[in-house]
Length: 340
Ligand SMILES: *Cc1c(COP(=O)(O)O)cnc(C)c1O
Image 1 (tube, rainbow, N blue to C red):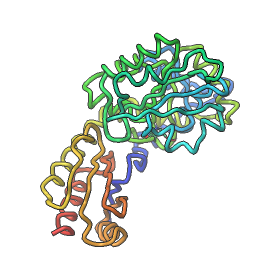
Image 2: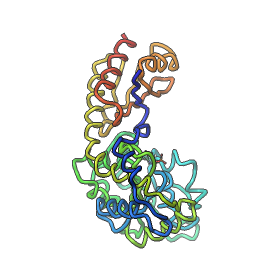
Image 3: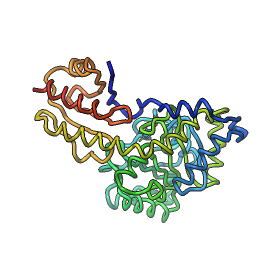
């Protein structure tokens, strides 16, 4: 039976072209900077975001934490949104690796409230930590693309106070698609950007950290310290190149499939689609469950549909490269049947 996995875009399989490129990759020792495939991917990614340099890192978490470590010193305070990945889902790493304190601010659709960010930036008082960094997430994992105007406003406030901005752009290209701009236009409002090759872009492993040359050189050394100096990593960079060249354009299909799914679910009376969170390839919804969660997900899995949800009926369905139209339609029809 064919299965369709709606849990995340992290479940995507490397494409046949990626496997071929990995097989054929010309590689070298990347710690000596001898890997031509990595060097090519790094310069491609820098150019794509309009920055000077880029660095291949093993994961998104690695890239975010490396950025924090490189921008800050121990004891600094980092301002970020209270629903962001760095705060919620990175195992407290900022305290362990960079030794910084995270200060969260409430956000709506990934945006800080007007006038709030300024108030969180620390002054000169002897008691205060220094504000070392502001982080923003775009696309936000709540399903929203943060508008360019908000990115610009945050960047201006940060710049006026001499504070760098790091963008957690795990799904940067989904945000660009949703906003109808080039990724470069979003990256213009950040000093460093992390984006994932391994989510909707289908690469098996890897993220990129992008910024100016001196930042990336310092990050390169810190990456070595963190154990991320990899050797013949062109094997992975080869898949990353296909991700950039072939899979960024393909994200538009994921967004269309998410729209198709949302439109189908919208017609089912026991499902409430959260339309306010519908900018990218995510569909959040509340389902009035007719049975316990486990039985419900098992009934879906018997049809080849893999989903996760909460016992009170909150679900996030993610459209990805491996959930084509027939998978989306099967999910809609199966939910219709289960809920009738
Ligand atoms: C997935 C994700 C990350 C981390 O990426 P990993 O490769 O899973 O470590 C960081 N930020 C956001 C917003 C993410 O969705």
